[in-house]
Image (cartoon, rainbow, N blue to C red; front, side, top):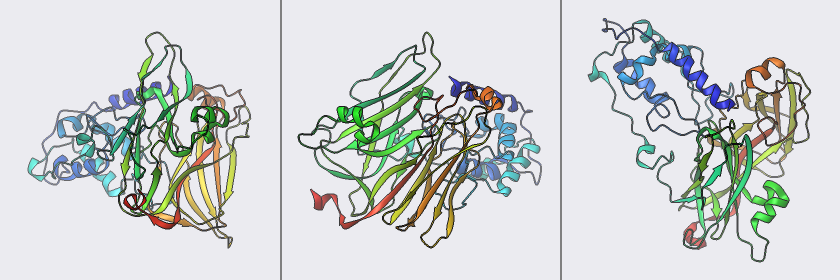
Length: 437
């Protein structure tokens, strides 16, 4: 599998960088692990770099940095990655300080890590160490948002056969009264693909019950994703779960049908088959809900990328017919995608850069989450652009045929140009689970 091969290559390269001398004693004035480095590692690295690290859409860190003994062998690799600003992973160049999950080290933090390595990576005095960081995953069965109120696992596991290369398939689960007895408002949801690196991405949908309507499976087959209902979100490598702000929610009705829309991608061969049983977890909101959340995408499905073109742009836009409160962005493309940009053009003609991702990477597909919801008024036009490199050089690096003319499609060798956006609209009256029952 291409993604696996790239991951192994990265791990081997980092491993080669990890060969350092034996631990040195700290000299006066040296930067030390316990006093200077550990606070940076705790704040920026340990959420992923731990034995049971955060699962970001199938990506789990290949080594742990929970203590000095685990961290020091990787000191030179850490210095290399932070100096190149490859770690912590963050691919947006602008805007800054508006996204809650922004992962950027300051110049001073980078200099501290480099100085530590130059000094021989000394431990220092253990008494200088901050208190250990506590992680919710360790007490919530691996769910990064905490212990869910509901977890709905696909009823039966599914086997991805040995000969599978690309597989796009949807599974459906209609919630029984025992599983969800009443309607609820939810403020968070999280996915587990349960397929490791074989799970290219997963999209989840929820469709409420409608008496007399044909089964959701038939609707989805005829209508595509639109037949699956309201999009919850999609996750791919690097994606995080989303917890909504106070006062925001999505209604989950008793008797609803969940859609697990899966894309599996692997190298075919004997013994490569794997069982999978994806899960969707929900976190209930009991407080009043003023804003109903909608997850949507602004996309272009009518393109063809010319063979050999090194910087092909694809654009799309939408003009808002109502005020919205934007919560998240998630640009999505495949192997040829190199950059993405979201721009708002307001009714008065003013332009604002909403998101600029100049180095898009399919291997780490970030969900950009606002610290505070952003108002875009009615009449605002959202323009989204993607750029693609279909050159021979990139084809050799990512193992695709640059002589092809790829269009929109579900396979990894196809392309996509989808600008996902999570937003909310104000309800006519505040809703509350207790009042609505």
